[in-house]
Image (cartoon, rainbow, N blue to C red; front, side, top):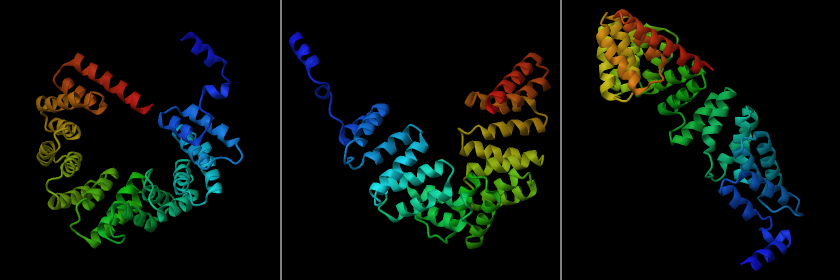
Length: 326
């Protein structure tokens, strides 16, 4: 045994470990040994000619290490070597998008979409998000519709791009697309809900209630609808309607904390701190880190004359809020 170990030590360094190869580098990468895999690609780049696929693999490694600038350069080099490398094409577009260069990402994502879909990321999603960032809303709608298999000019396609635009805080574009969806299909589920959410965000409570009541009539088994509608009723101090809507939300979405918190607000508005406390304590059991629930529960305890409990809950709410804002 010792003789074998001595012989191993006497072997030249190149014989003690596998020679650099694309397959070995990919194996290291697949095992999560990113630094070792990257060093192996460094060695492969010194070979003449450089083995095919080295730059593409290097791009994937750097992307996984969140070195976006390095990944983009590697994918660019891969495309210089092989302009038909669909994976490098797609990933260069994705990397540029993540770097905040949506306009530069679009040509690569468009080319990737035109090719055979790869197994990494559906280019339609990132392409649609890129189109939204440069305000090419019609193109964004077509890209998202392709991902979901919708007809590009259909009501669902307009509602889909409205949702995606709202995620990027493009409120006016979202509202316009949702209204177009309703023109095409006045009973499309989800469209009135989105418009109601936009109105709530603007504190336009009458329009929010009108839109959400229309959604309730179309989609009467959606917990989200009753949650948002209850919120709108609470804000307009229609507490009886709020209680009814939120009770339905709880039945449909028993694991959601929002309806319990809003029911706590409703009970406080009805001067019923005992019931408010029950709902808020339930919300805190479900989500101990929700500072709004702690803050409202502090108000409940204060109304009940429980000064020490109220002070504890106020302090907890302040700590949680401070942590959330960091």
